[in-house]
Structures are given as structure tokens and as C-alpha cells.
Image: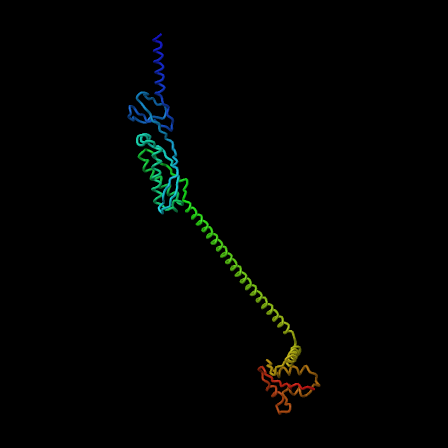
Length: 329
């Protein structure tokens, strides 16, 4: 009876020790094994057997993790006080160093990130802090990685989430933004007016060109019409006989005689003109007109016949007509 009880207790103790000796390590985990206080190596993943009496384990997660850094107050290069919060992504590269070189990595990384942030922001003016986020993120990542590298941890990414400048700076930024928008609106309006003026000038130029072209075409058409009219007159005039032309000359002279001028320039041979009209008159015309046409003297002893005709000049004649003043009846 007593022997059975002892055997049962031993079996239970063996089962308990076996349960305490077995560890199942996942793929993204590692176990740092300490035996009698000395680190003897990394175990995992899979099934790991340990001595529950002399061995102790420390678990390390190899997945990429993040650490939120709460709002930190920093002073920029131009003495502006701002509040910044950001987030850090890190990954354990050396499980043994992450356990042996640092205690509570999260707390240590948070303190290092706060001091590094103040150092980085202190080297940048406020405008760069607000506009150059990528440069600030890269600078923070490089400086943090220099510190965490000796802990076996790699800082993969640093992202600044929010930057809160003081109220006075926010008000000044609002006024600056309003002024910038007003400036852009004025520039846009001026450019629109410039384009409109250019378009109007080009339209006026095109209208002037078209007007000049129209006037040129009209002048050409008028000249062509006048040339055609003159050609028609010439053609018709060639078909007229000498008597018709002489009658037209007489009509013209009649119109000229009614003019108030005292001097008349006749561009032709006056004697030839009168000789032509002599054939149009009846035979019982007055001898005075015939004698004048033949060059006969009219009482002043001038030679007659061909001598009188030869005395009429062939150049344009200038006649002076003496008009008697009109007297009242």
C-alpha cells in the first residue's frame, strides 16, 4: 500500500517536471536560455526542452513593433515653442543583445526619442519643421538608430504625426495664408486682364487687316470696272463716224461757253475742228463762217485760204473770250 502511494507520487512529480521542461516557441519568437544565471544561447522556434530547476527563459518577439511617443515640447532654432508627437517603428535584429544590453527597451527608447527630438528640432527653424516633415523624420530615424543599434534593435521608420505651434504663431500663419491667397487672386486677375487685352488687340489687328484687304479688293474692283468702262467707251467710240464726234465736240463747247471762265484751253487744232463742222452746215451758210474756216480775213486784212488755215496753231489753243457785262433793261 505504501509502496503504491510512493510510486504514484513519483509518477506525478515526473509528469509535472516534464510539463515544466517543455516549451513551444512560435515562428516569430525566440527564447534566450539562462542556466544558473548564465546565458547559454537562443532557442526556437519549435519544441524546446529545459531544466525547470536550473534553467530560466526570456522571450523575445521578432516582429516589427511600434512605440508611440506622447507630445513633447521643443524649441526651434528661431525660438518658437512647439509641441510634437510621433511614432517609432522598430524591429529586434539580435535577440540576445536586446535582452542583455538594455532593460525595458520601450521605456529607454521613449526617453531617447524625446531627447533626440529636442536636438533635431533645435537645429531647424519653424518653417522647416512645418514644411519639411520628410527631412525631420529621416534625421530622427538616423539619430535614434545610432543609439538603438548597440541594443540589437533597428529603428525602421519614424513618423511625426502632429505639430502644434503656439496660438500667436497660428494666428500669424492664418494671416499669412489669407494674404497669400489674396496675392494669388490678384495675380490671376491681372493675368486674365492681360490675356483679355491681348485677345482684344489681336482681334482689332485682324479686323484692321480684313478691312484693309476689303478696301484693297474694292479698289481693285473699281479700277477693273473703270478700265472695263473705258475699254467699252473706246470700242464704241471707234465705231462712231466723224460727224457724230464733231457734234459731241460742239455740245462740249456749248457747255464750256456757259461757264463763267474767261479763258478756255482747247486741246486740239481749232482750224481742223472748224473745217470739220463746215461740212455739216448747209450750203447757204453765211460766207463769214466759211471765210473764217478757210482763214479769210474778216476785215483786218488777214490772208485767206491755206495761209489762214496754216496760221491756226496745232498746239492746244488758249482762247480768251471777252464777255460783255450784263446790263439791266
